Image (cartoon, rainbow, N blue to C red; front, side, top):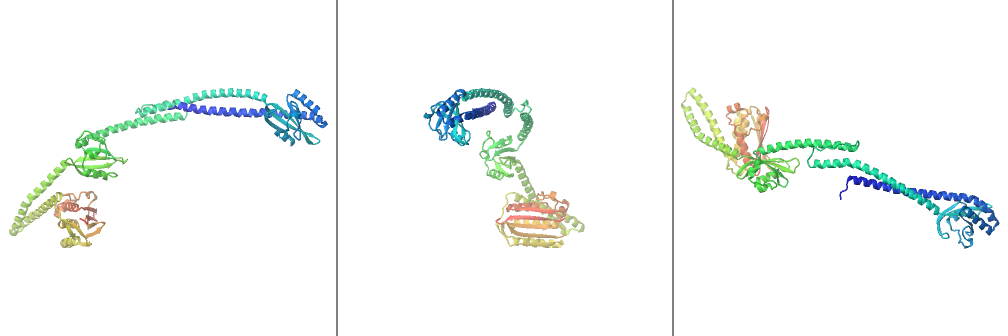
Length: 571
């Protein structure tokens, strides 16, 4: 059962008030009762002093009859029971009973106390009078020693009646105080719970999405501070929610307008969000809440999603006969991933047509260029000096075109489905052969040549690997005017690392990302004058990739360049 805060506060005050009232009532009653008994005992002791002086002569004379008569007369006057007891505990006289019939009183606490010379007090039930009695005993000294005990007693009936009246009055007063306290508690609980109920009601409205609710502060205490903080919070929530709603609408518009397919999946692979582009790719109505592998069947996609668990990953995949660039990005919370599918099918088709065109044109150009070169060489044999100069220019440009056509045909082959031979290649012997070809050219240019290669054998195509080294050394030779060229090869961590280093003009930082593109040259005038085609590094990159390796470059302008080829030893 749900209890309101008013009930809890009121009940708390009720428990505290009743408990305190009961404790105060009991404490007061005990104190007053003890006080009355104490006062009565003191009065009895004061009465006993002159009475003791009056009875002492009778004790000296030893007249029992006179003593009994005297105590009875004093009982009639004072309304007190008077008993005289000797040191052995024998009752010598009693104002309300026959002394001879009474038992020995030596063991009575008040008597024992009086025999020591002090005033003894005791409260107990009297079997003789059949009621509670208060006893006060005084020692009676004769000739400097205690000769007897004078005991005064009175029933506690009248004290009980007084205490009963007092208890009644205390209870009435306590109930009045409790009633007034409960009225004050109810008022205070109402004042305290009202703003809290208002805050609770407003909080439920905020939870339901109504951020316009406000609570009016009614007090000047901490609850007012809480109310003002609540109003400030709801104001900020309203502003933040409005801003988030606007951004969410913008994001939905952006996602809807994207031509790429977009999917958001959780850690289990369930689709949380998708756009129209993704729906076109999947070609089904029900997407939300389903697992991505039910709709997109691709081993490559599964691998990419696994790789993209804690870092971005990308790669090309094939879905429903079309090619896509898939980019996986994990969200910051690591509880979801974003899949972006960019359709590359048309681009792949255009690229394929482009490659076919280049290959076909190159193939068609090769025959007439060979004929032009042949006829030019024939004409050179019978030409005069002036004609020979022009024919040499034609021949040089024809050679450059033939070289470009041959490299284009080779590049088209490498970019397609090339045939590669996998056989053992002695890398030391391969490098030695290539160096032997370029040694005269390097020395003729005034450059130093350094080569070192550890004995190592790899699996690969010896002709294509020779082309790779030839292109890198040829590139270093073209762009180095002084200094040296070095070629090194050594096994390292399951790979063979080949470096071709020069002290040439170097490559500016802004060109490093594009030097492996076909036809891209840093210094076009220098490349043209040296017969460069801009295809050598692109061919080298494809050959390295064909062998499962890669090429890296580090270069500083006017200091030199270092090309590093990393190939797996296993081929």
